Amino acid sequence: MREVFQQELAEVQDRLVEISRLVAISINKATQAFNESDVSLAEEAISEDEKIDELTIELDELAITILARQQPVARDLRIVVSALRISASLERMGDLSTHIAQLARYRFPDKVVPKSLRGTFAEMGSLVTAIANMLTELLTNEDMALAETIRNEDDKVDALHLSVFDAVLGETWKGEAADTVDATLASRYHERFADHAVSIAKKVQYLGTGAWQQNTGAPHTSA
Amino acid sequence: MREVFQQELAEVQDRLVEISRLVAISINKATQAFNESDVSLAEEAISEDEKIDELTIELDELAITILARQQPVARDLRIVVSALRISASLERMGDLSTHIAQLARYRFPDKVVPKSLRGTFAEMGSLVTAIANMLTELLTNEDMALAETIRNEDDKVDALHLSVFDAVLGETWKGEAADTVDATLASRYHERFADHAVSIAKKVQYLGTGAWQQNTGAPHTSA
Image (cartoon, rainbow over all chains, first blue to last red; front, side):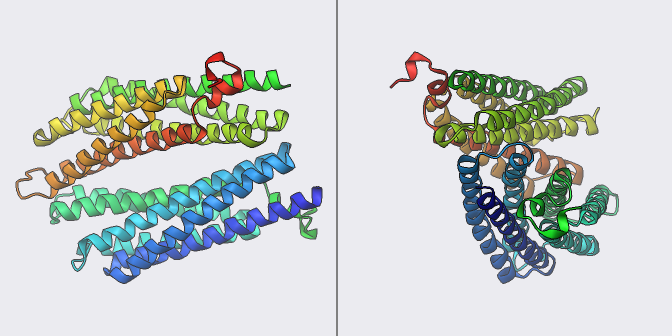
């Protein structure tokens, strides 16, 4: 029974990694689409999200089945409950990525990002993509240093988010209302995306190094 | 054991109702604060959120304890997992209420809502407050007609949300960038608040009439 449980937990972890990888692909495409007004890339980002939604529903069903069949307690139980929460955050990250892609699609063929903010959004796009990739890595290897890095990178996203408001509310802002709306929403979506990554990183940290491996009996987690 | 489980489920339901009630109080204060530039009401809405956060953490711990001790399966298991998800949505609704209140606080003593949108935001505020109150009622009595009503009221919020964009992007819009930012964010917060309510209503519907009562042995749930 214990061995089956260990296999099932490993399966849960594999699926979280797979979903996180799709989220990283989606946000990479969405932010590029947004920054370069590339509507076909926007479509691709949006279609990744459908897959993400399907996979999170399947993962949730698997987690509930594990709860029912294995009846885990203590730390094992917390791992499965955390998986459900991580899944919910990943699903939401996929939605936010879609929202960013949709902004590119709505305004096409016009550019979404006004010239004065292009550098800021390019940086934000790189940061959230890097964060999504680090998250995949964190879920794969549970390298706790990555959890810290994600939190630090999120601080940078927050600073850029504030700088967008400063720009839009500043005296030199020349954007029309449509630019103001787009910049406000896009910045908010990037910020929320990074927040969810931090929330997942905290859950992985809370479970502690080796939470999954401990249960899959990998030799390097005996420490 | 079964009787203990039934008591614990009733406790979970009571706590969800309590949190939902606080969310309703918070959004009522936040939307009033926003519409009337009332900074002390904004503070009150924000302080409700601290209580909401505490209570959701406590509820989550209770749900995990129930999973560990009672090891529910089938429908019972789904009820406890749903409670965790409903709790997460309520917590997020409290956050969104806080965001609306903060907009009022940031701009004080200036009015947040530009004149041309005051009617729209007054209506949105009434709708989300009514939705929060219906949600409390739904969690209390599981009157499934309310779940449908919440979905219909959410459609109205969505329509108003779109009308805010139409106004802001229209040719007659005279607002400054700050007005555009505030209207965009506030409208988005109202819309997301209502979305979470719908998400909770769907979970209650999915569990079916009498999901909690069935387990607490109330006589009217034998149907």
